[in-house]
Image (cartoon, rainbow, N blue to C red; front, side):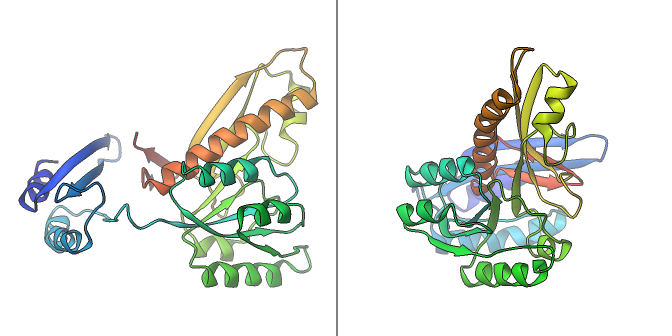
Length: 271
């Protein structure tokens, strides 16, 4: 921390926020530093390049894995969904209001229900049908669209298709999914029915990065709500959808703000 702070001071940087975490068992140290140059709220590109050049030998000496990015560079996000639109509508409104500091150049769906929302927000919509027989061709089309749009992050806003390992490999730790249960309990397509049958007193939602293993990627955010014996499956679904909106929007915002560091199958989420 001292070496990094000293380097930033030598380049006229003002540290706005700094946080750190240590995993004692693995002997790993994590840090995140926000800073401004020349007194500006936004980082100035030429000065930022000078900081980056100076940081290279320090990072090598300390054996760091590191990245340096400007807040002025907004990530480009593609939204995928199927027929359920509650998460999609929530993300789009948060984006329109400025809560999500990103660009959304593309919405992709294997159904047509979201086209009206895309049109309302002025975002390109692409309908790519996917079946077991056409999955390879469908994903090839999706990947071509993502490359064309220069997408950095893919958000699965209730996209009810399993991505192939080849697709996931194109966006390591850059595909965020929301799962409508409190993982690892009640995985699969009907978790609320399973939760109701089990008589649970809490239901939840989980947002995580997508890996090759279904619903097993590094968890970013989770939340729960208390229920009772009076609640039926439809009540669980309604409350669960509220949780899905919350945990997905939090995960997307934290990723956009570069607050998440992945290691192993875990995440460090800096506040």
